[in-house]
Amino acid sequence: MLIFSAWHTFGQGTVIFNNRVTGTVVTHVWYGCPLVRGNWTNDFPAGTNSYSGFVLTGAPGGPSASTTFAQLLGAPGTNAAEFSLVPSITPPTTFRTGAAAGNIVGQIVTFSNIAADAPVATFQMVVWDNSSGLYPTWSEASVAVYNGLIGAGKSDLFVQTNIGGSNNPPPNLNNLTSFAWGVLECPPVIQQEPANQAAVPGGNATFSVQVLSWNGHPVYQWHFNNSPVGGATNSTLLLSNVQPSNFGPYYVTVNDGIPWNSRTSIVATLTLALSPSLTNLSVGSSAKFSFRTEVGPSYVVEYKSALTDPAWIQLSTNPGTGGTVNVTDPAVGIASRFYRVRLF
Image (cartoon, rainbow, N blue to C red; front, side, top):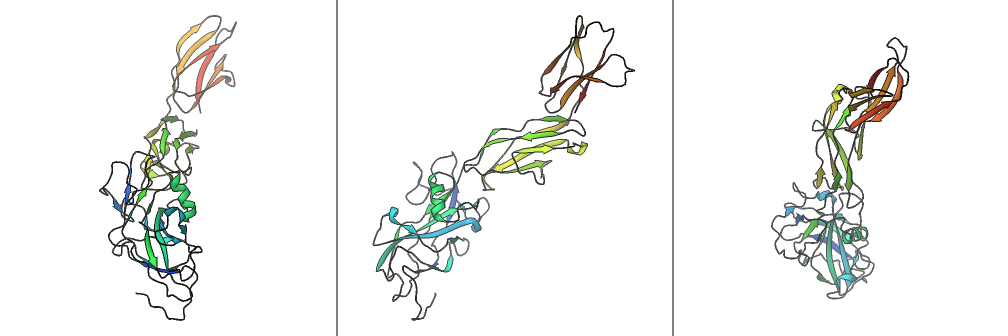
């Protein structure tokens, strides 16, 4: 219990936020994005009336207690309409769970829209996920909730009498019961997976992924051999000066700022590119031949008229696509010509 001396003076609409939510504050991950967000008493999705499957805030699989924000809304009068409730001018605080589920201790909360010593006012607690750090206040979070970007929850409305001010002592919050809030259930959607690549030592390789992000702030982490790659936090992973130790499996995880609600790509493998074999060789008015490519390296076709010539001459450069390259050399009147394909 908090005890205040009679000479304490508080601003208009001041209450002492010293509440213990009875019961358990729970969260739930809904699937089937991007559907209903809310899951408090009056916000169950259609056909749903059970909290089964919910997990504790701060528990494994649930949102972090340190990024679960709470703020009190209020409006003067008894049973004020929900749309008339405005956030307190006191900054939000974190919403803790555990042995003291939902306990927020000793916070003085002031409202600009409720007169000092108001005889009665209506309140509601709102809670939202700020794992991304983009929504530090309810004014910002409420827009994100409306657009389906984050999960949030609300308590039932409750009435508080004898609001503190110049004369009344600030009352403790009461009548706030346990409620649930919905975690944003929509991880990013991987629209294009990374593809297998081939490379040569000293060359380059690139893996990329395309995602649909619900909040526009996807977080990437590339992995090699099941270990995070340092600094590899973009949609594209560029490997320069490839070495034998770089060959192996790669994948990426991506989330919208909620680490436990992420997507993992398929595994794409970086392999050593093989030297191609020249096939379908024909000689006439021009020399023709073909060779298969692998995705990744570039294939440079070069020639010499005699092996004793000092340098190879470039005929064409072809990107590796996994398809076949058909080469035509319109050499006329040449007694002999030697070809090679160089990879880089």
